[in-house]
Length: 345
Image (tube, rainbow, N blue to C red; front, side, top):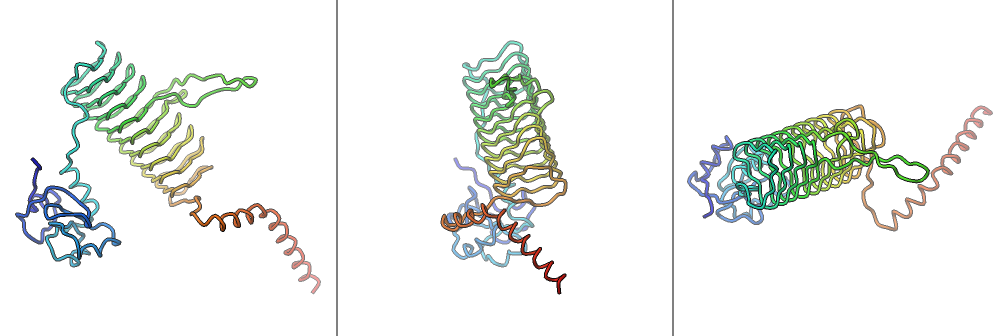
């Protein structure tokens, strides 16, 4: 049976003001465009203000500044998007990653499991592993030797955690994440690649979330470190010996090359490429497709990706780009002539 919440309960949970029927029941959250009478919607983007007139939502979460725009049941808050996020947690119906210890799970006799640990079907827990209380290990996961996972952390299906990895408390790993794989370390001897064993670890703090199919390589000698409260999207590559500071966020398909340090509270958009052996200070924002080739020492927003254009215009611009050196020489020549003319006058 679907669980229902009254608007009175929702308003109390959000510490919000309610204008409307406190007894009205809500079953789920929906968009303004698709909401029904038993749904609650939210307005967090001014682009959707026009939908307030047509929405069939039983109630709308709305900011104090925009409350007058809607005449129906409304939950009035300071920030509608934050309120939506918190309400989504309250109404979350996501099942557990695992329930109990499945008979097909392989758990080494030398592993240590805390209270209320769950391990799903076909998961493998190796020797020396320590799992804290309330850890959930999803189906098909692998946890390598001597790895430690803090209490309340969840691994969805088919997450691979290599040996000697240290993971903090209340972390979340989406399916297919790989933690502690070898960094890309090789030496070239007369055209032949000589593999360098990666002897460091991966150390992950508390409340870190890792997206699906994201890879974090272990350090070559020192550790790869992901600090507390970092969030990483899907299909990200974090190379060996990278360090990411507390509270930083990184969107899908971005990559960080080896031995780079990213500061605290940085925001890295999708398809960003960050060079190795550089430092990025706290509070940096990198917009989509930015290529970072040298250290950033001042906080702020940085960009380098080019917006799309028609193929015809792009080809014309590229032709100009190829001739920049010629343009530069011609400008220098004109400047020299102009200077000489001024002297002669």
